[in-house]
Amino acid sequence: MSKIRVVITGAGGGGANNIISTIKEREKYDLIGFDISPYKIARANVDSRFVVPPASSPDYEEKICEIINKEKPDLIIPTNDPEVEKLSEIRDSLKTELFFPDHASVALCLNKWKFHNFAIENGIRVAETYHVKSLEDIEPIFSKFNSELLWCRAIKGAGSKGATKVKDSEQAKWWIKYWNEMRGMQISDFTISEFLPGKDFACQSTWKNGRLILMKAAERLSYIEAASRPSNMSSSPELAKTVYDTNLFDFCIDAIEKLSDGKAHGNYDIDIKMNSKNELCVTEINIGRFFMITNLFNLSGEHSMIDTYLKLAIGDDPNISNPFDFSEKYLIRSLDTLPTVLSPEEITKRLDS
Image (tube, rainbow, N blue to C red; front, side, top):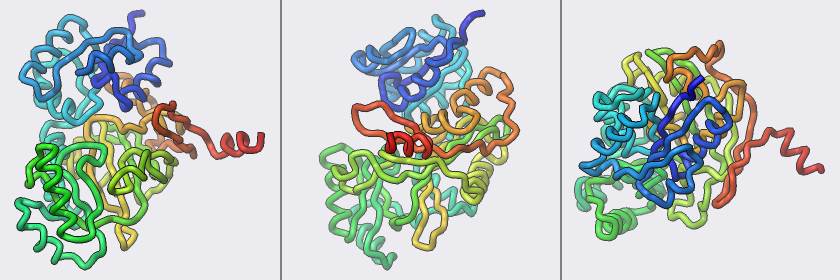
């Protein structure tokens, strides 16, 4: 029986590696790795490797279509936002399966300001947020809040890019000016919003033709290298635990169904924080890809997220009767170590041994 051939983009990175390590445990897959770095792709645990241009390059489409036409993969899985956006845009040129939401949803979610406006218009709770068009906007924005802390972040990007807590307009001006002058971003690439002080959740789900197939969630308890970050926070947890919360699930389902007009298809990863009133708020939707911590969702419950995704993408039935599959697990991570997923019982046993 021939193996199912799967392209993983960004194959030298951490998020892709967490997907690859799970798939490599199954013998029926042949993995094809893409990355922009020859050094990163060289270390990727895949069966064949290709260096490709960045998604922003005018040569990207031609190069990957050339490889796809030659290698004839059954599926391509992007692992970062730039490639999610580009692959969605050129999906009709790809001679392989792209198990993806519609392009309008992809484009909307990848622009945090546009998604914010969509959320407000559609009754999806989000933090009160204002777009910074010029530095002169910052003081008037601060005057709208009665809070000791606000949140300043970039409209596009992952991993809390350009995001930090600020306590006054001068700090916000300095922060945005720094990213403008030193990192080449525009002043208008930023927003300022209320700071959400409550619990921090990641909810990952896979859908097919409007039907929820599998949804799992985790609470971020601490963050990797938090002490060295200006915000003391990140979207990448050092410690996280799976949670079963029907209110959280209902909140995410409502947001996804409104976003997709009831036609959700593919992966939807939602970041959620709780505000000062202990209400759930969407901070962003990482659409069309997997969370960096997807191995927690692959190793908890009866059904693996990546296995479910792969089966759906190639037309198999994953046979899941309860989409809210759950078992209590903890993810422990740090730099230059393999992520570890343990149950509370396993943690207790190790401490007692």
